[in-house]
Image (cartoon, rainbow, N blue to C red; front, top):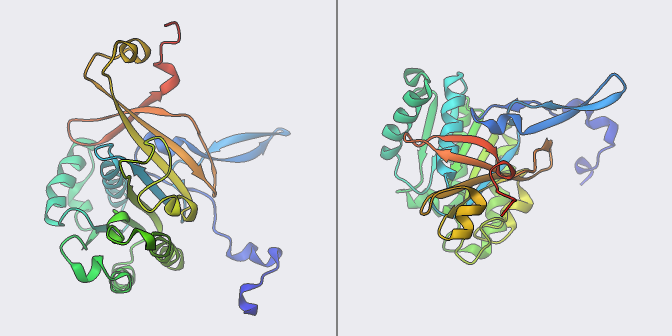
Length: 282
C-alpha cells in the first residue's frame, strides 16, 4: 500500500507538462492556463485540449459528436501523430469514405492520414464490445506496435449499453487504461431521451462526467415558434447547434455556450458565442 502514498514535492518529476493537443477547431482557443505577466495573471490559450487529458463529448443524437471526434483524429494524423480509433457504433468500413471526404474538405493530407490512423472495429466484434479486457488487450497491442499517442472511442456508451449499472466500472477501467499508457483521449457518449440535453449527464448517469478529465456538451434546437425566430434571429425550421465545455479539471476553459455549424462535408465549424446571436430586445 505504501506505493500509493506520495509527498506532493516528490510528484514534480512525474507531473505532465500542460500544453494543448490541437483539435483543428475553435475549441483549441477555449482551453487555457494562467501565467504571470508584468505583475498580473493573464490567460494563455493552450491551443488544444490538455495533454494526456481524457475528454468526454456528450449529446443527443445528431449533434455532431462523432464528427468532432473524427475531425480531431484527422487533424492529429495529418500532423504525423499516430491515432487509435476504436469504433463501437459504426462498422470500420464506413470510416474510410467519411474521413477521406472530411480530410479533403479541410485541406488535410489524406495520403499521410490514412497510414496514421489505426482502427479497432468493436462494432461487429462482440468479443471486443462485450469484453473490456479483450478490447484493452487489443488496444495495448496497438499502442505498443503502432506507437499511438491519441485514442478516440466512439462511443464509450456502446461498451455498456445493455448493462448501464456497470457504466461507472467500465468507464473507470478505460480511463485508467489510457492514463497508464499516456494517451490523450476522447470518449463519445450518448444521452438517453429522459436526460437534459444541456447537461453533462449521459447514459449511465453522471458516471462518465465524474471520472473523465473534462466534458464537452453538444446540443441542437429546432426553431419552431415565433418566440424562437425572434430570440435567435433564425428562420422557422432551421436548427441551432451549440457546444460548451462543461468542465475540465486539468486546465481553465471558456464556459460560454458557442454556436456552431456542421458543414456540407460533415465537419465542425464553431462560429460565435450564443449571447451574440440572441435578440434581447424582444
